[in-house]
Length: 121
Image (cartoon, rainbow, N blue to C red; front, side, top):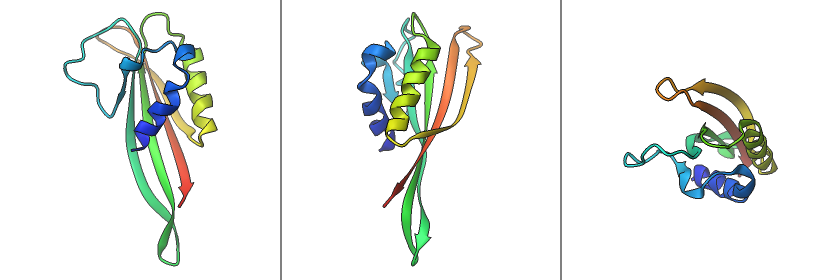
């Protein structure tokens, strides 16, 4: 699962990201997870499709992921997003969309970042 690969990439830079590893989730945030005062990250796979046909056989696999960051505490959005982007680009993930939002219930900043990766198979 590509979202697990992305989580493992990010785990290598946790000290700089200032994110508790128990606050990084794949695909969904558990219902029993309660509101915390620390930044939370959700990594979800958007799609993973085979494409690039040659002789009726797929030659590439295109994967897209979404990273949602729910900012809390002293986590710096600029630094966090820059580190995530650098690490993912080192692993051939390239950003194709990113947008901020403010949670209407809490007033906290949320950032959604979308990446894609094409692999030759």
